[in-house]
Image 1 (cartoon, rainbow, N blue to C red):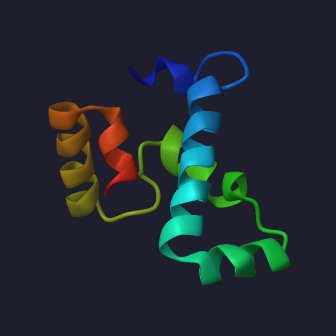
Image 2 (image 1 turned 180 degrees about the vertical axis):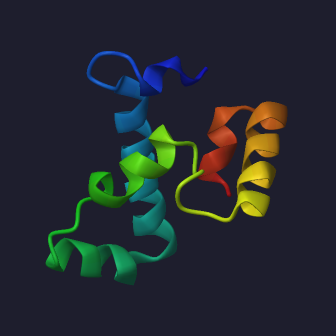
Amino acid sequence: GLSGFYQDRLPLLWRYLQACDKLLANRVPDVRDHFIRESVQPAVYLHQWYLTLFINCFPLSMVVIIWDAIIFEGLPVILRI
């Protein structure tokens, strides 16, 4: 469930941040390399997305689709979206 996002030391959040970093490396390595050169860590831009379940960064119509996917398929689906 989502509790790992909010537990002490945020274990699930860190796991998802690492997974997104790997996705960037595999799918868009140039973007990841640029972020590294600019010293932009994934936690800088991803933590708020995950902790608010995207409500603050996407239009509500898109958030509802993401939430539907999470409810239907489980939390790991957000790594595929």
